[in-house]
Length: 165
Length: 73
Image 1: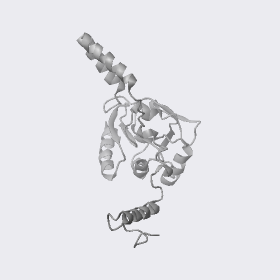
Image 2: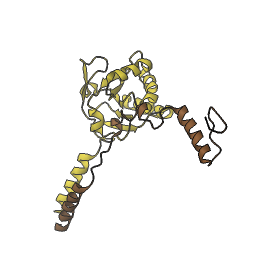
Image 3: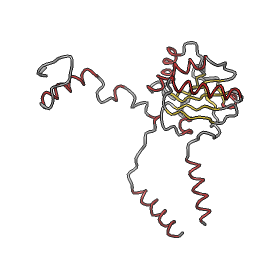
Image 4: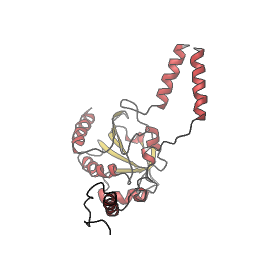
């Protein structure tokens, strides 16, 4: 009986716990922010290192880190490393307007998560939230809050290591 | 074991009587992030109001603002 209680407790904590480092990423298929008729599935990103960023144009932290992401994406070819943004704005035009100033040349892959399905699934405790995912879809690191120059340098080291694996 | 189950059941029952608190998740705060939701949306006005308040209360010398003096304007 005690074992049963323990197992059910473990199952419950597993059920309500947010995905962490070492867990498999949550599969998704979301429309592009710019061309809603085209979608991108997480399965199509297998084989490359991915930084999944959940953001919104109204979130000041997200605004701060976006230029850094553009810089980061420019440092790696998209075949090896891809930054995938998932905007949760109520109006996608707000996200487009913001990115038009920051990422004019559309270096970043931008998706639109109308139903906020990803932050709900990842149970994001803060905005923005970023997830470093390896070539096999395993979560390597979780970043809650905006990244700065220092953390970006550390992130670069990790990305280079993951690309080489 | 029976006591544990009874306690859990009792707690669940008590939970039904508690006030339902809605937790707004960080990704649901779009409305709260709007300027109109700020307690003092106009920074200059808030500064001036603070300046006048402190002078009327006579608790401090007043904060620096675009007008000094008595705070009567």
